[in-house]
Image 1 (cartoon, rainbow, N blue to C red):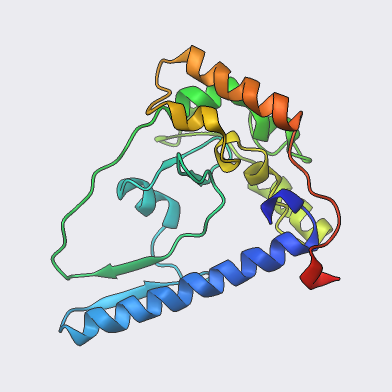
Image 2: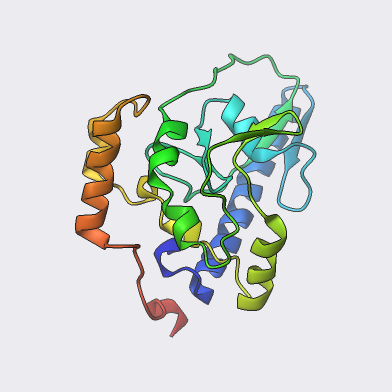
Length: 204
């Protein structure tokens, strides 16, 4: 549905995903409590942690130029659920599939952002936070104007489009040839960006 961004069907699907994630988190947290441990379900608008940062620490992906967690297999087109607990668990470590190197070359989200809210520059160490620069104010102004959450930076990300070339490589770190292979396949298939016009059947 994200390929219809910024149409209304995209934000409906996004909202449903947040609800689905909240329900799953509630089931998990109730189960953990039934075992005698503490558990808190963090849901949209009621987070006590930063979802993308926690998910990055858990090895679910890396934060890309669009400031959203990006998974190698699913891109940024998924919603995060978080349950914090004192239940003893095995801990996964961070992963690095070379997203920073990929984003340095790609820049598709920055180039297609309708408000140019995403920087085309490399990561900076601003306020002791090494990250991509995002103008959240201009981004949100567009959200209010559209009446949706836009989503174009998610749609345009090559990792969001199930490309065969992405599956060929385990890492894009210092691998310019692999990065170019992905960008070439994307351009052949979609041109500048993927866009599915019109509403889905359930919204007609």
